[in-house]
Image 1 (cartoon, helix red, strand yellow):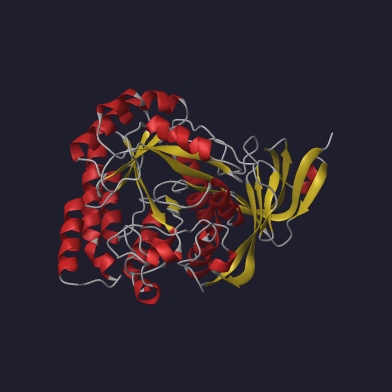
Image 2 (image 1 turned 135 degrees about the vertical axis):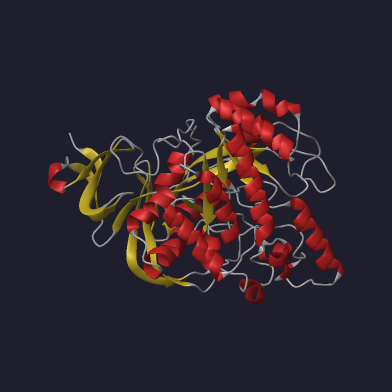
Length: 458
């Protein structure tokens, strides 16, 4: 009996090797990888000549349809699929109440998770959720274990902004997560340093967008990264540092990593490829936190990705419009920038074409490592028995990135005008083609995926 699909004549890229071969898919699952002659016949054959055949990208840091991002699930996951991303992890937020809050009353993390799942209409790719802390309260400790049992096995916290948490509360969360084998993730910048610098610059009339980078300096990021990593180390929690942007912050994580089992971190595509000079060119559009930094910081992130202190590359995707970004001051929301659709192409061009990193490195940092880190057991790999989430990638096609192609509601791109070589051609989710030649061909394929408690000891 034939299988559903064979992807033939491709160059297979795994986290360990590159070789010519084919992939057999049946009922949404990879059933064989190797020489086409040894694989079963198929009802459908996809010719991957002159293409790389890679696992779909797993992006563990994405904001969709909430108080910071305007994308719907359909628009965000369409952008993702066009960019070769086949799984994302979004956030189910607690609600908190303040003058600037998006909510009128408090709610629990579980209510935030349920709210996101209800909003997830017509997703093109699969998704999961981090639990999101936005306030301190005893109620959260009553729900963490149940959320983990339901596949929410990681929890996001902030050390800054009005919803930042105290070190004492973060310590308590880490204690709980350590006992339950879950993962803590934190946005680390020292709040008091950033607030005092921001106020100083505002009083001095420094309203040019480039002052954002000076108001949220690398040492403020490193201070908080060091504090939180120490808390994780002392409590024994599995800790993952979000969007590490600077040499100083990456060095801080590395100091606590030791055997690499309990302290991990990510770099975002924009922090590896762009610098703060972009503020002079684009004004508020690249306003994000931690901010863009220097070329030396770009280099440092690649050094730490090579050496393992950082192990994942993500986007921190946030969809906003040009109008909203350009009518606010640099110290005001909305922060963030969209990146899902361009992430694989941009990082491939920077890491492989410009810096000489290998294709297995690309797959490790964008596919295999995020899946393993966050308990996506069936994602990020081409191993038989796992989900047939696959990308066909043309490594030789060159093009210019433009926001005119955005599937996201964001009407600008921080990569506008960037020439890259390497383009996503076809994206499959559990064996079905969802994007091909720059077009979405199927929506509604995606679904919520509960995650396992990850085992960081292996």
